[in-house]
Image (cartoon, rainbow, N blue to C red):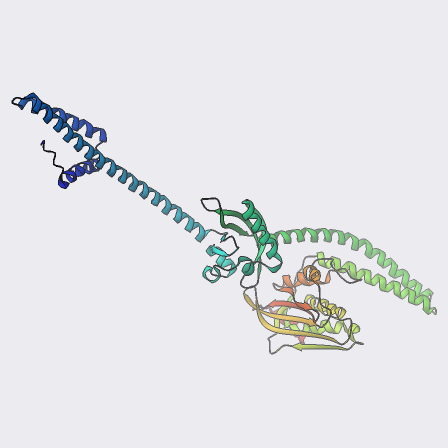
Length: 468
C-alpha cells in the first residue's frame, strides 16, 4: 500500500475507474467525496493499528496521502478526458444530424422547387443548377457544367449588360433583381425574373453568385393578352360609333355623287373628279371596315379544303398589282398533304396581306415570290408550315419587332392592321405566324397551320364548292 510502485497496470486500472464513472453517470464531485472518505478511514485505521514510533507514522500517512492524491488525479483526469470526448462525440453526432437534415432539406428543395436555382463562379461559368432548370432549358447539368452561362443561355444582345451586372455584384456584394431572357435548347426565349446574391468564403471574398429565377413567360403573355383585349374593346367601342356616323356621311356623299354624275353627263373632266370622290369614299369605307373587323370577336367558319386554293385565290385578287410587272410566282409543295380545316375567307385575307406586302417590298423588277409548303409541328401536334418568300429589300430589326403591332406601318397608305389581323387569324386557328429570314436577299414569313382530324358534313360540302 505504501510502496508507490506506479506500474502501467496500476495506472490503467485507475483510468478504467474514471471511464466507468462517466459510463454510469457519476458526477465528478462524488469521486472527490468518495476518495476523501476513503482517505480518512485509511488514515484512521493506520493510526489505530500503528504499534509505536510517531516519526514512522507521519511518514506512512504522508505516503498514503500521496498515493490517494495520485489515484484521485488519475481517476479525475480519466473522467474529464472521457467526459469531454463523450461530449464532443455527442456534439458531433448532433451537428451531423443537423447537417444531414439541412442537406436533405436543401437537396429536396433543389430537386422539387418549381423555380430556377443556379450557381455561377466569379467568371460567370456554370457550377450547378437544379432539375427544374434542366427540364426548362433542355440541357442536363453534366452537359454544360463549367461552360459560360452567357455564351450558352443568354441572347447575344443581353450578354454584355448582364456581364456588367455580374461584375458590379461581385465588386459591391449587393443582391440584385432583374428580368432577362434565356435561350432553351430549342431556341425558344423564356423570360425569367431573377433574384441574385453573392456567395462569399469565411474571409468575405466572393466565390460565386446564387441566382433564383421564376419563369414569367406565360404571365407576361397573359398580361399582354389582357392589355390587348382592353385595347380591342376600346377600339371596338370607338370604331362602332365612328363607323355608324361615317357610314351615314359616306352614303350622303355617294348619293350626291350619283346626282352629280347625272348633272355632269358630257363633261369628262368633271366626271373624273366625281369618280375620284367616289373612290376616296370607298377607300374610307374600307378603312373603317378594317378597323371594325380588327376589334370584332373572331368566329371561325372552319371547312376542309386545300390550303393552296387560298393562296392562289389571294394571288388572283392582286392581279391588278402584278399584271404589268416582271413577276414569277412559284409554288413548292413537294407532295405535302394540304387538305386542312380552316376559315377560307380569313386565310385568303392572310395570304393577300403577305403577297401584297411582298409585291410592295419588291420595288424593282424582276419580282420573285415563292410559296413553300412542308410538314412541321406546332404546339406539339402535326402541322403544315407555309413559307412566303420574296426577293425584296428585306426588313430592319425595328420592323421585325413591330410587324404584328396594330397600327404599325411603313407605308404611306394603310391602317397598319393587315399583319395584326393576320396574326389574330392565325392564332384563332391554333397556329402561328412569324418572321423567318430577312435581309438583302428578301423576306420570309412563316405560317403554321395545325392539322385537324375532325370535320362535320357541312364543312365537307363547302370544301367541295371551293375546290371545284
